Image (cartoon, rainbow, N blue to C red; front, side, top):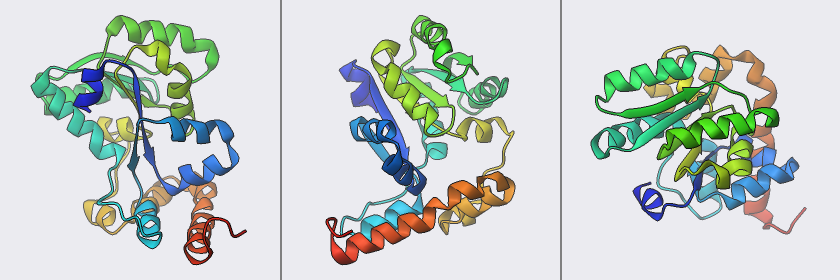
Length: 224
């Protein structure tokens, strides 16, 4: 992260899970966004399982919900500036207050709900450029947040931009994250499904993902 800031140019970080992988299969723009990201974090036990099965194990899961507080803590010590964009109106402000309480000295230089609608882009970009943050966290939900960052990365003037999904909701206390034991067992998806039953359609991607990974492990990438 600090190397990205030192380099000065804009960077995009994405947090990958099986739903992202399957969305990229049918969404060429999203696939390019993931391929061109400067850093991809494995946010999902399904990716760790797939990596092991394909002989390229990853050391650990790195979630956006854990990464944002870590960056806030580092920023409080190093003087980096944060901007929170997205979520429902008022959520980013509540998240900023919570981060300031937990990490005294952290500089949150802007909060705005906004919208990923292209008609709002110019105004949002102007707000962000004026605030001049080092980190921009965008909570529009996937894939919209990641597509938005990718589309505007060169104009934002922010060294590190990251889509964070529901992280601001968790920090603000308007949504409850899965208990630690569920996260350790890889059951965070179940907790979300129980609290957000509308997500069941998105969960249909998981069996398809498992099938494609198992097929590749058995037959190789070229086998249909």
